Image: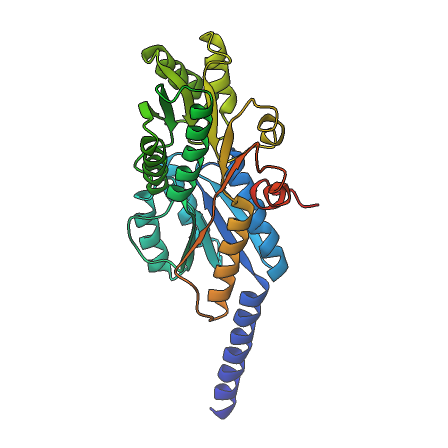
Length: 320
């Protein structure tokens, strides 16, 4: 009987050691993202991977391809895949609520990186100050329109979905900035599939319906060519100014040469790094800030050279 007890204790100790070792060696986190084909999210994922590597973690990336069903399926896959934690960039702030409920049930910590959530429990929320960034880039555009003596004209907006918290904040900040200068909006058209063709058609619609429109604000960056094509095809080249949110590598030349008035640049590489840092700190049992908000850089011809180093690393994820 005594030998049987010793055997049982030995098996228990070996099993515990094996489980502990397995937990230590399987250092893995998941990144659940709305659409990894969008450069902004690609750069954020590189920031996540860069910091995870520093901590000895691997990263599994799950792209939802802007499909709600896929987002839920991906989240469930990550939970079943023995991850230590999740960095989440949800499709919408409303869709995040259900995902956080799943994570709580599985006892898996979640850090939200951008977009936000309408509720639920999470470790930390890493965001950009969208309202302030949009306000500042709105001022950049207003200054240019006043300089060109077209402040009596209107500004069209091709926006990201307004059910996103960041979308609402961008619109609010931008409208406040231009309205303070007496400039009015020509209207707002919301993106759904974020395609080049959709951006082209929405831009064309705004131009066609608003003959007094002299500027177009794109609340994203990667489909900027769709807006430029619409301006060109409507014979408005040189007549309609384009300004964007976020950034692409091409903007480093387009802003200085005047093809683009400017851009409000978030810092996705840095956001990804901070999200991973906060998740790691939580896993280490350390206290973590509930909300970390980063500045958005309002970049124009006047300051791009000064901010170039920061733009390359934190905005575009170029590590030199």
